[in-house]
Length: 184
Image (cartoon, rainbow, N blue to C red; front, side, top):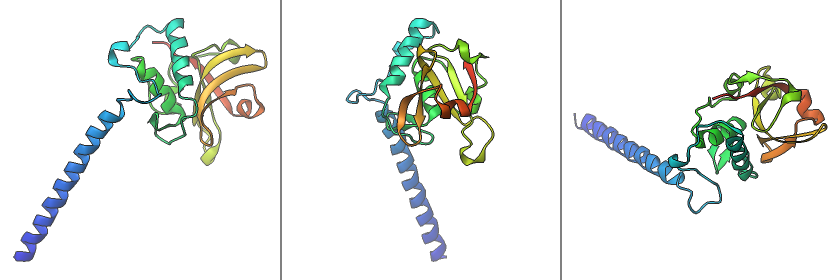
């Protein structure tokens, strides 16, 4: 009987420690989003701009570019690390736009457009075949049209973090799946 009560007491103590830990994580996340001392720009809820127009798109491109160099982190959505769909999720979320979190789900948002009509703010999707998949597994956002041979998009590279690349490069064109223009 004494062993059962000691075991029960141990279980209760472990449960209390676990609850205390989880509660501290919740508080940590709240502080983590307060990046006043960080160089990463986090918008307050007062700054949300729900008008999806060229001014907002240009601001979102600038915000996405401010994350350049942030390392790749699977599932990441903050200045400590982001994956490709996390970058879109983070940038659009900071402007009050709710979008799916996963790249193939993001590819369902908006209207599909031909590659020759791409402009800043449009989304591009790829099938890189990493992991042997044949479905969309990479996403990016068009940042700048330079000329007929250079169309830049920003994304999170698994090896180099958030960076801009030329969509018309041999590699990216071989993986290109589709482009969409989000509409909100």
